[in-house]
Length: 284
Image 1 (cartoon, rainbow, N blue to C red):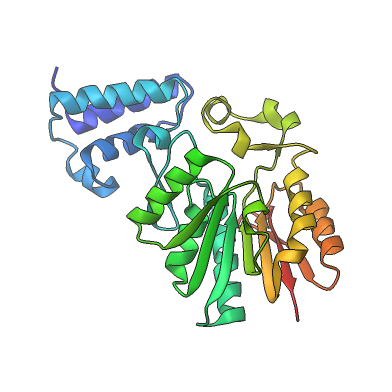
Image 2 (cartoon, one colour):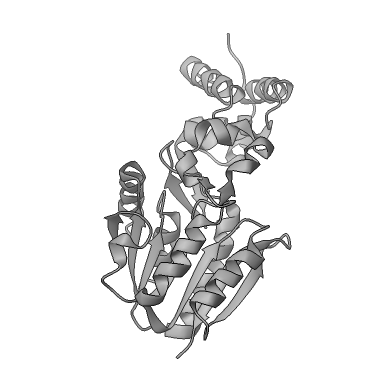
């Protein structure tokens, strides 16, 4: 059966809506198959899809209807204007994390100018933070760690594709970086409390790696460990910036204030006015 782009898109959007999914997923999947953007798709609205394109599109739409995220189907997600490979070994990069990048880039420029400095991304996942920082600030010497070998393999592929020179290390939290001093530490660790599972979408729960989502102590355990371990790793001046869950600001701020009594620690809100980053500036 022959269908135009427009017919296929309309049918798939209605199907996904009936299944309780976002109808926009159909457009993203079809754009991926046709290797085009939104305006390109609209220009081809009356083109007839090849049979194999239609079959592939229908199989992707059915996969998403069953709950598999679009990004894992296409194997890609855009982050800070660049395309990153993603698979089930890594979290899908979130728009909120782009705000961590903005905050970090601005502070790096203020503190270091064009000078070299050493930056580590702890729990790098897809490598989105580490690769983006290297691309935005080429003078940074960037290291990235993760406890998952599979995640590191994905991060390495992203660094190679985007031509970012990064030192990748396998290990838990600060363990791979303890013998050195660092100017900047960034981290978006697992921070969801196990108690919050009931509030979460099954699309996330059934497909994204739980080791990258959940943490003990109501989601705070990894911040506590970082606050305990980082004082011996930091240069002065320098800074630490960690992404947090919107309810965690006061608790995480207190941990870093206790760990770095002379530092300036603040909670930074995101574009929606929710607590998103704890920023710890270590002064001379």
